[in-house]
Amino acid sequence: MFSFLSTEKSLADELFKQKNIKTTQTSMAVQAFNSSDDKIYGYCFFDFSGLTATIISLECSDEYHFLPECLIKSALNYAANRGAFIAECNNINLEKELINLGFAFDGEKYSSEIPKLMAGSCASCSQKNIKEIDKHI
Image (cartoon, rainbow, N blue to C red; front, top):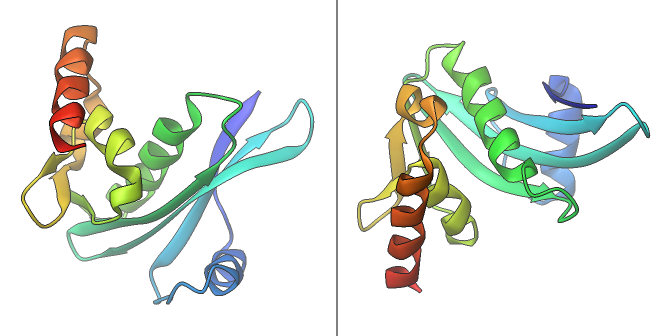
């Protein structure tokens, strides 16, 4: 069974350092942990300040298709519980995942309101999002 939990701040700082990513007092990471084999399958690195949560990077196994969405939503949930309302990301490598979740591109970065992202979407919306991805590629 998978759990998506925040890491301790000291571990988050160490992971950021290993990835050569600058950290702040509010830099954090959530991890995908599978209790059936005691393995970590991925991390979402993020930062939050005031009303904004910024997704920085996502690293996860390709073995499970649901990991990107779950990791990003876990990071946003963590930030929202600490006052964040807006989610943003300028990591173009995450474009497909961000669009599938409901982020919109404003010419500079992907962003959305966290409650909208957490609400999910229907299958027809997903198909529309896939067409949007094809336009950008």
